[in-house]
Image 1 (cartoon, one colour):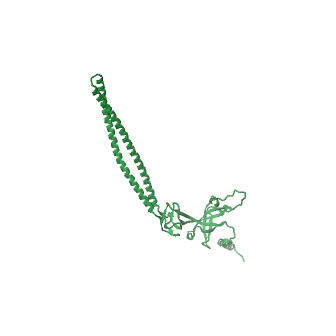
Image 2 (cartoon, rainbow, N blue to C red):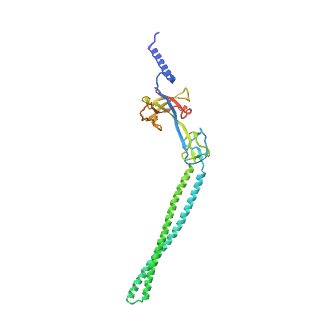
Length: 341
Protein backbone atom coordinates (compact mmCIF):
# COMPACT_ATOMS: atom_id res chain seq x y z
CA UNK A 1 0.00 0.00 0.00
CA UNK A 2 1.35 3.36 -0.96
CA UNK A 3 1.11 6.38 1.35
CA UNK A 4 1.40 9.90 0.22
CA UNK A 5 3.49 12.37 2.21
CA UNK A 6 0.31 14.05 3.45
CA UNK A 7 -1.09 10.78 4.79
CA UNK A 8 2.19 9.94 6.51
CA UNK A 9 2.27 13.34 8.17
CA UNK A 10 -1.36 13.05 9.27
CA UNK A 11 -0.91 9.57 10.74
CA UNK A 12 2.29 10.63 12.51
CA UNK A 13 0.57 13.64 14.03
CA UNK A 14 -2.32 11.50 15.28
CA UNK A 15 0.07 8.98 16.84
CA UNK A 16 2.12 11.70 18.55
CA UNK A 17 -1.03 13.38 19.91
CA UNK A 18 -2.33 10.04 21.18
CA UNK A 19 1.00 9.33 22.87
CA UNK A 20 1.06 12.75 24.54
CA UNK A 21 -2.53 12.31 25.75
CA UNK A 22 -1.73 8.82 27.02
CA UNK A 23 1.31 10.00 28.96
CA UNK A 24 -0.56 12.97 30.42
CA UNK A 25 -3.42 10.78 31.68
CA UNK A 26 -1.20 7.95 32.86
CA UNK A 27 -1.57 7.37 36.64
CA UNK A 28 1.43 8.71 38.50
CA UNK A 29 2.17 5.22 39.87
CA UNK A 30 2.71 3.96 36.31
CA UNK A 31 4.41 7.06 34.90
CA UNK A 32 7.14 6.11 32.46
CA UNK A 33 9.30 9.08 33.37
CA UNK A 34 10.71 10.00 36.74
CA UNK A 35 9.13 13.20 37.98
CA UNK A 36 10.18 15.68 40.65
CA UNK A 37 7.69 15.35 43.49
CA UNK A 38 7.08 14.49 47.13
CA UNK A 39 4.37 13.13 49.38
CA UNK A 40 5.74 15.16 52.30
CA UNK A 41 3.28 17.97 51.66
CA UNK A 42 0.28 19.47 53.42
CA UNK A 43 -2.45 22.03 52.88
CA UNK A 44 -1.67 25.22 54.79
CA UNK A 45 -3.71 28.26 55.76
CA UNK A 46 -3.88 30.96 58.40
CA UNK A 47 -4.64 29.79 61.94
CA UNK A 48 -5.30 32.47 64.54
CA UNK A 49 -5.10 31.74 68.25
CA UNK A 50 -7.19 34.30 70.12
CA UNK A 51 -5.98 35.03 73.65
CA UNK A 52 -7.83 36.67 76.51
CA UNK A 53 -7.05 40.42 76.59
CA UNK A 54 -7.47 40.54 80.38
CA UNK A 55 -7.95 38.21 83.33
CA UNK A 56 -11.51 37.40 84.33
CA UNK A 57 -14.45 34.99 84.34
CA UNK A 58 -16.10 33.91 81.09
CA UNK A 59 -19.71 35.08 81.24
CA UNK A 60 -20.96 33.64 77.96
CA UNK A 61 -19.69 31.85 74.84
CA UNK A 62 -21.66 32.76 71.72
CA UNK A 63 -20.20 30.25 69.23
CA UNK A 64 -19.55 26.54 68.94
CA UNK A 65 -16.69 24.63 67.41
CA UNK A 66 -16.66 24.59 63.59
CA UNK A 67 -19.09 27.54 63.32
CA UNK A 68 -18.52 29.91 60.42
CA UNK A 69 -17.99 33.45 61.68
CA UNK A 70 -17.81 36.96 60.23
CA UNK A 71 -15.28 39.67 61.02
CA UNK A 72 -16.40 41.65 64.08
CA UNK A 73 -18.80 38.95 65.31
CA UNK A 74 -19.08 38.60 69.11
CA UNK A 75 -17.48 35.32 70.19
CA UNK A 76 -16.95 35.39 73.96
CA UNK A 77 -17.95 37.84 76.70
CA UNK A 78 -16.05 38.14 79.97
CA UNK A 79 -17.85 39.16 83.16
CA UNK A 80 -17.77 42.91 83.83
CA UNK A 81 -19.00 42.86 87.44
CA UNK A 82 -15.59 43.15 89.11
CA UNK A 83 -14.32 45.76 86.66
CA UNK A 84 -17.44 47.92 86.94
CA UNK A 85 -17.30 47.77 90.75
CA UNK A 86 -13.61 48.69 90.65
CA UNK A 87 -14.34 51.52 88.21
CA UNK A 88 -17.07 52.91 90.47
CA UNK A 89 -14.69 52.86 93.46
CA UNK A 90 -12.03 54.71 91.50
CA UNK A 91 -14.55 57.30 90.28
CA UNK A 92 -15.62 57.85 93.91
CA UNK A 93 -11.98 58.25 94.96
CA UNK A 94 -11.49 60.83 92.21
CA UNK A 95 -14.58 62.74 93.39
CA UNK A 96 -13.21 62.82 96.96
CA UNK A 97 -9.88 63.97 95.55
CA UNK A 98 -11.53 66.79 93.61
CA UNK A 99 -13.47 67.93 96.68
CA UNK A 100 -10.25 67.99 98.70
CA UNK A 101 -8.61 70.16 96.03
CA UNK A 102 -11.58 72.55 96.07
CA UNK A 103 -11.30 72.78 99.86
CA UNK A 104 -7.57 73.48 99.58
CA UNK A 105 -8.30 76.19 97.01
CA UNK A 106 -10.45 77.93 99.65
CA UNK A 107 -7.74 77.44 102.29
CA UNK A 108 -5.16 78.83 99.88
CA UNK A 109 -7.23 81.95 99.17
CA UNK A 110 -7.79 82.55 102.90
CA UNK A 111 -4.14 81.96 103.75
CA UNK A 112 -3.05 84.40 101.05
CA UNK A 113 -5.29 87.07 102.58
CA UNK A 114 -3.84 86.43 106.04
CA UNK A 115 -0.32 86.64 104.64
CA UNK A 116 -1.10 89.80 102.67
CA UNK A 117 -2.57 91.40 105.82
CA UNK A 118 0.53 90.51 107.84
CA UNK A 119 2.79 91.91 105.12
CA UNK A 120 0.70 95.08 105.02
CA UNK A 121 0.98 95.38 108.83
CA UNK A 122 4.73 94.94 108.59
CA UNK A 123 4.99 97.65 105.97
CA UNK A 124 2.97 100.05 108.16
CA UNK A 125 5.06 99.25 111.22
CA UNK A 126 8.29 99.88 109.32
CA UNK A 127 7.02 103.24 108.08
CA UNK A 128 5.93 104.18 111.61
CA UNK A 129 9.27 102.95 112.98
CA UNK A 130 11.14 105.34 110.68
CA UNK A 131 9.09 108.26 112.01
CA UNK A 132 9.53 107.19 115.65
CA UNK A 133 13.27 106.68 115.19
CA UNK A 134 13.60 110.18 113.73
CA UNK A 135 11.76 111.53 116.77
CA UNK A 136 14.02 109.46 119.06
CA UNK A 137 17.17 110.84 117.42
CA UNK A 138 15.77 114.39 117.69
CA UNK A 139 14.87 113.76 121.36
CA UNK A 140 18.40 112.48 121.98
CA UNK A 141 19.91 115.68 120.56
CA UNK A 142 17.57 117.82 122.65
CA UNK A 143 18.31 115.72 125.72
CA UNK A 144 22.05 116.20 125.24
CA UNK A 145 21.53 119.96 125.00
CA UNK A 146 19.38 119.89 128.16
CA UNK A 147 16.41 121.05 126.10
CA UNK A 148 14.46 117.85 126.86
CA UNK A 149 13.82 116.15 130.13
CA UNK A 150 14.83 112.60 131.04
CA UNK A 151 11.27 111.27 131.11
CA UNK A 152 10.47 112.55 127.61
CA UNK A 153 13.69 111.10 126.25
CA UNK A 154 12.98 107.72 127.91
CA UNK A 155 9.46 107.71 126.46
CA UNK A 156 10.78 108.30 122.92
CA UNK A 157 13.38 105.55 123.34
CA UNK A 158 10.80 103.11 124.75
CA UNK A 159 8.42 103.75 121.84
CA UNK A 160 11.18 103.06 119.29
CA UNK A 161 12.11 99.83 121.07
CA UNK A 162 8.48 98.79 121.28
CA UNK A 163 8.03 99.22 117.51
CA UNK A 164 11.19 97.23 116.87
CA UNK A 165 9.76 94.30 118.86
CA UNK A 166 6.42 94.57 117.05
CA UNK A 167 8.25 94.41 113.70
CA UNK A 168 10.05 91.23 114.84
CA UNK A 169 6.76 89.66 115.94
CA UNK A 170 5.01 90.49 112.66
CA UNK A 171 8.01 89.23 110.65
CA UNK A 172 7.86 85.95 112.58
CA UNK A 173 4.12 85.77 111.92
CA UNK A 174 4.77 86.27 108.19
CA UNK A 175 7.25 83.38 108.24
CA UNK A 176 4.65 81.16 109.92
CA UNK A 177 1.87 82.15 107.50
CA UNK A 178 4.21 81.65 104.52
CA UNK A 179 5.06 78.16 105.81
CA UNK A 180 1.34 77.38 106.14
CA UNK A 181 0.82 78.49 102.54
CA UNK A 182 3.68 76.25 101.37
CA UNK A 183 2.07 73.30 103.17
CA UNK A 184 -1.16 74.02 101.28
CA UNK A 185 0.78 74.19 97.99
CA UNK A 186 2.50 70.86 98.72
CA UNK A 187 -0.72 69.15 99.75
CA UNK A 188 -2.50 70.49 96.68
CA UNK A 189 0.30 69.32 94.36
CA UNK A 190 0.11 65.85 95.90
CA UNK A 191 -3.67 65.73 95.43
CA UNK A 192 -3.35 66.89 91.81
CA UNK A 193 -0.81 64.11 91.16
CA UNK A 194 -3.08 61.56 92.85
CA UNK A 195 -5.95 62.83 90.70
CA UNK A 196 -3.94 62.26 87.52
CA UNK A 197 -3.20 58.69 88.61
CA UNK A 198 -6.88 58.09 89.35
CA UNK A 199 -7.90 59.49 85.95
CA UNK A 200 -5.44 57.19 84.19
CA UNK A 201 -6.75 54.25 86.22
CA UNK A 202 -10.28 55.14 85.14
CA UNK A 203 -9.20 55.25 81.49
CA UNK A 204 -7.47 51.86 81.83
CA UNK A 205 -10.51 50.30 83.50
CA UNK A 206 -12.86 51.70 80.86
CA UNK A 207 -10.53 50.34 78.18
CA UNK A 208 -10.50 46.94 79.87
CA UNK A 209 -14.30 46.95 80.08
CA UNK A 210 -14.41 47.57 76.33
CA UNK A 211 -12.11 44.54 75.88
CA UNK A 212 -14.48 42.22 77.72
CA UNK A 213 -16.17 41.47 74.41
CA UNK A 214 -13.91 39.19 72.36
CA UNK A 215 -14.84 39.63 68.70
CA UNK A 216 -13.62 37.90 65.56
CA UNK A 217 -10.68 39.76 64.03
CA UNK A 218 -11.15 37.92 60.73
CA UNK A 219 -13.72 35.93 58.82
CA UNK A 220 -13.21 32.20 59.16
CA UNK A 221 -14.26 29.06 61.02
CA UNK A 222 -14.00 28.29 64.72
CA UNK A 223 -11.45 25.54 65.24
CA UNK A 224 -11.25 24.79 68.94
CA UNK A 225 -12.89 26.38 71.97
CA UNK A 226 -10.78 26.25 75.11
CA UNK A 227 -13.26 27.92 77.50
CA UNK A 228 -16.87 27.69 78.59
CA UNK A 229 -19.21 29.82 80.69
CA UNK A 230 -17.77 30.19 84.18
CA UNK A 231 -14.17 29.49 83.17
CA UNK A 232 -11.44 31.63 84.68
CA UNK A 233 -8.92 32.94 82.17
CA UNK A 234 -5.71 34.83 82.77
CA UNK A 235 -4.49 37.54 80.46
CA UNK A 236 -3.02 35.92 77.34
CA UNK A 237 -4.65 32.50 77.84
CA UNK A 238 -5.79 30.86 74.59
CA UNK A 239 -9.57 31.24 74.34
CA UNK A 240 -10.23 29.83 70.87
CA UNK A 241 -8.70 29.22 67.46
CA UNK A 242 -9.92 30.51 64.10
CA UNK A 243 -9.07 28.94 60.75
CA UNK A 244 -9.10 31.21 57.72
CA UNK A 245 -9.75 28.98 54.71
CA UNK A 246 -10.11 31.83 52.24
CA UNK A 247 -6.42 31.66 51.31
CA UNK A 248 -5.01 28.13 51.15
CA UNK A 249 -1.71 26.92 49.79
CA UNK A 250 0.43 23.79 49.84
CA UNK A 251 3.72 23.54 51.67
CA UNK A 252 5.78 20.74 50.15
CA UNK A 253 9.04 19.57 51.69
CA UNK A 254 11.28 18.57 48.78
CA UNK A 255 14.57 16.76 49.15
CA UNK A 256 17.57 19.03 48.92
CA UNK A 257 18.76 17.05 45.90
CA UNK A 258 15.59 18.08 44.01
CA UNK A 259 16.05 21.84 44.38
CA UNK A 260 18.06 22.27 41.18
CA UNK A 261 15.01 21.15 39.22
CA UNK A 262 12.58 23.55 40.95
CA UNK A 263 12.08 27.17 39.93
CA UNK A 264 9.62 29.91 40.83
CA UNK A 265 6.61 29.70 38.52
CA UNK A 266 6.91 25.97 37.73
CA UNK A 267 3.54 24.31 37.18
CA UNK A 268 2.71 21.67 39.79
CA UNK A 269 0.24 18.79 39.90
CA UNK A 270 -1.46 18.41 43.29
CA UNK A 271 -3.01 15.11 44.37
CA UNK A 272 -5.23 15.35 47.45
CA UNK A 273 -6.12 12.23 49.41
CA UNK A 274 -9.57 13.69 50.13
CA UNK A 275 -10.25 14.19 46.40
CA UNK A 276 -9.27 10.89 44.75
CA UNK A 277 -8.98 10.62 40.97
CA UNK A 278 -8.69 14.38 40.68
CA UNK A 279 -5.54 16.25 39.75
CA UNK A 280 -5.40 19.89 40.86
CA UNK A 281 -3.08 22.48 39.41
CA UNK A 282 -0.80 24.94 41.13
CA UNK A 283 2.51 26.72 40.75
CA UNK A 284 5.67 27.27 42.76
CA UNK A 285 5.44 30.64 44.55
CA UNK A 286 8.31 30.63 47.04
CA UNK A 287 11.26 28.49 48.06
CA UNK A 288 12.44 28.54 51.66
CA UNK A 289 15.85 30.13 52.35
CA UNK A 290 16.69 27.30 54.79
CA UNK A 291 15.90 23.65 55.40
CA UNK A 292 12.90 22.67 57.50
CA UNK A 293 15.11 21.44 60.35
CA UNK A 294 16.60 24.92 60.77
CA UNK A 295 13.16 26.28 61.68
CA UNK A 296 12.52 23.63 64.33
CA UNK A 297 12.68 24.54 68.01
CA UNK A 298 15.88 22.52 68.38
CA UNK A 299 17.77 22.46 65.06
CA UNK A 300 19.34 19.06 64.40
CA UNK A 301 23.10 19.36 64.76
CA UNK A 302 25.49 16.66 65.89
CA UNK A 303 28.87 17.69 67.15
CA UNK A 304 29.83 14.28 68.51
CA UNK A 305 32.28 11.92 66.87
CA UNK A 306 29.58 9.83 65.20
CA UNK A 307 27.77 11.29 62.22
CA UNK A 308 25.04 9.94 60.00
CA UNK A 309 24.20 11.96 56.94
CA UNK A 310 20.49 12.76 56.67
CA UNK A 311 18.79 14.05 53.57
CA UNK A 312 17.41 17.47 54.38
CA UNK A 313 14.04 18.80 53.28
CA UNK A 314 13.42 22.31 51.96
CA UNK A 315 9.90 23.80 52.24
CA UNK A 316 8.39 25.08 48.99
CA UNK A 317 5.19 27.15 48.90
CA UNK A 318 2.81 26.13 46.12
CA UNK A 319 -0.36 27.97 45.17
CA UNK A 320 -3.64 26.15 44.52
CA UNK A 321 -4.96 27.60 41.29
CA UNK A 322 -8.39 25.93 41.23
CA UNK A 323 -10.80 27.90 43.41
CA UNK A 324 -13.69 25.53 42.67
CA UNK A 325 -12.06 22.80 44.73
CA UNK A 326 -10.78 24.88 47.64
CA UNK A 327 -14.04 24.41 49.56
CA UNK A 328 -13.20 20.69 49.74
CA UNK A 329 -9.79 21.32 51.25
CA UNK A 330 -8.93 21.63 54.92
CA UNK A 331 -5.84 23.00 56.61
CA UNK A 332 -3.48 20.14 57.47
CA UNK A 333 -4.66 17.71 54.77
CA UNK A 334 -2.02 15.45 53.26
CA UNK A 335 -1.24 15.90 49.57
CA UNK A 336 1.28 14.74 47.00
CA UNK A 337 2.83 17.12 44.51
CA UNK A 338 4.72 16.68 41.26
CA UNK A 339 6.28 19.20 38.97
CA UNK A 340 4.89 19.21 35.45
CA UNK A 341 7.90 18.18 33.36
